[in-house]
Image 1 (cartoon, rainbow, N blue to C red):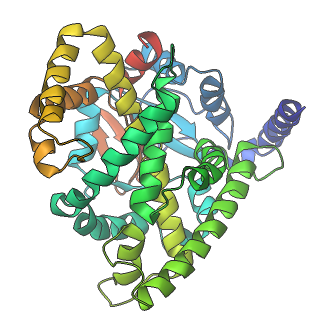
Image 2 (image 1 turned 30 degrees about the vertical axis):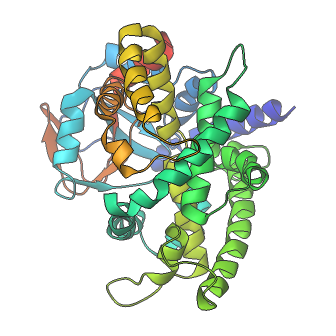
Length: 395
C-alpha cells in the first residue's frame, strides 16, 4: 500500500512538472557546448529514474546507460532538482579534486539541509569547512592510538556474537553493525549493544532517505528520513546535556570521544557550538561512515576469500602478532605498526573497489572540461566506474 501511495505521489509530481514546463524550462545559453545527455522531465529532471535503479538494486545502470549512449568521460543530467554534469573515471575524479575551491566547491542537495536544520543557518560548504578544521586534531594518529584496545575489545565481542559457529554469514550486514557500533563508541561513548541497536533502525532510515527528492509527504523515503533524524537528534541532545554536566563535574574526560572534543573546542572567533549543531555534526559523521567503512571491510573479506595466497599472507601476519600477546592482552599501536602486509592488502582493495560511490560539487565559475562547457552554478558529481562494476557484477 505504501508503494502505491509513493507511486501516486510520483505521478502527481510529474503532472505538476509538465504544467510548469514552459515556466521553468530555459534553453542553454547559445554559443556554449554543454556535455551530451538529457535533463529529463522539467523541474524533477531524471531524479526518479536515478532513484528507481537504486531501488531495484542496480544503481550503476543509470550511469552505465548514459556513458554508453552519450560519453564515457562526462555527460549532463538533472538530479535533485538541479542541472548536473557527471564526471566519469579516474581522469574526471582527478580534475575535480585538483580544482577544489578553484573551479568547484562542496555542495549538498537541499534534502541534506532539510534533514539537518542547523545547517540552514550557514551554507553546507561552510559547515563542511568547520568540520575539516575541527576533526584533524581529534583524528590524528596519536589521538587515535588510545582507541585501539577498545576497538579490539568490540571486535572480539562482535565476532563471538555474529560470526563464530555460523555456517553462513552476511558480511555486509555484519560489517555495518560492527562499524556502527565502533562509531557510536568513538563519537559518543555508547558501548551497550542494546543502546546501539536503539539507534540502528532509525539511522538506516535516515541514511537511505537523505539523498532523495525532498518531498516531505507521508510514506516517502525523505519523510521517513526526517522522522528518523528527529528521533536520533532528540536522543543525542539528551546525551549531550548529560555529557556537558559530566564534564563540568569532572566525571567525563575531555579526550574520551569526539563529543567531548566538540563541547570543549571553539571556532576561530572563540564561539562554541550549541547542542543542536553538535547533534547534527555527530549525525553527519555517522552517515559519512555508515556504508564506506563497512563496504571496505566487506570487499576485504571478499577478496581474501577469492585469493587464497593473499589470505595466507594476511593470516600468517596476524597469527604472528597474536602469538606475541599474553592471554587476554588487547592490541596496541605497536601491533598495528606490524600489520604492514595486511595494511597493503586493505589499501589495494580500496583502490580496486573504492568505498565512496561519488560526491557532489558546485561549479563556482564557468569552466571547460574535455571540450565541453560547465556553467557556473551547475552541480557536478563524479562516478567511480570500477566500484560499481565490482560491486554488482562480481560480488
